[in-house]
Image (tube, protein in one colour):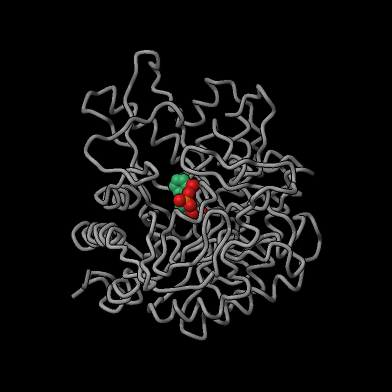
Length: 476
Ligand code: P53
């Protein structure tokens, strides 16, 4: 007997900008993903001033899911998916983000896409904002540093809830909202919040302000969803990389605790509807004067999420240093390598036990249903001359994580709703813009330079995952 509950949501996850392509079709506007070039491991993606000639923008075509979704969903059905997590490209619905009325062609595209899923009994799970906000909101408003974005997002969310309420039950507001805790790099502030910093600008308070507006917008969206249709379930989406102390030295433990505070306070606000005191004290100590109103506090309290969606790829480690007596966490300098785990080719620390730990951490803190909406192994696949891809390493990674997830459910008693491995079909990497960092059960013939037939084929992991789902996680 499997410990996974009846109706456990086995599936796969993607995001619109990473697979759809069709960046100018159906009236779609330019998104932040459309102005990011391809990078590589150690080579950041360039964020250009608009779309410039001669640059390689991998998201413009991606894997052309926009035209091929029917065939791809057929393959998902063959895998036995119970659900399919994708996002709605905000720019298909509101091309510039600040329009009063939505773009009907964009709305129709997602009607057709969700219908295609439902035809096979696959339940769509939808993220509203997954690293693809309208670029116009960056150039015209400064991104989420501007309070006006709350209204634009809530308008978008309401349109989506109203239109798809009978097709989509499970929603998430902001993908990996806490990535921007890494505010010294340009990637997360831009993809999360459309933030571009001035040279020399104090980045940290800007990040907190943007995150605050997003949390208010998220809470208002949750409230709106309940008013539109009480059966809708709206979750948050957190990037979970648990931060371990490098040693059991008490100061290392304090450093790890503070790192967890700085990365996961977002969850506190989403779930409990208010800021944790440690963060308010930190704002006071640093002299951050943020625009947080009484109306915002009321909104946060009235818009607590129904479940916690999270991604899990890796764990982090940290240690205290003599020059940091307050244990302040800075994601670009505070992390150290964990000597007990292996790393992927992209330096991500592989740690299946960390998934069990993370499930327990969330459950102990919040007692809300949990949904693992991303997990996976980005790797270089080799297609043999007969077209096959022997991705045993991916099977090993996923099986090890599912084993730990099972212990969290069966032995530790966490309430887990489902599991959707990332990039179930190969797609454009968010972090690097590469095609060669692959996650899929389905291989897509396309390379980093954008060349290839886009033909789909099944990898070895396809048959494996099909059996995992069919056995409700018993056959690994
Ligand atoms: P890529 C960083 C750390 C953890 C998850 O990532 C992250 C990131 C951002 O790179 O992103 C999530 O494609 C994200 C997806 C993304 C996936 O993880 O960089 O929600 O959009 O594709 C994997 O290998």
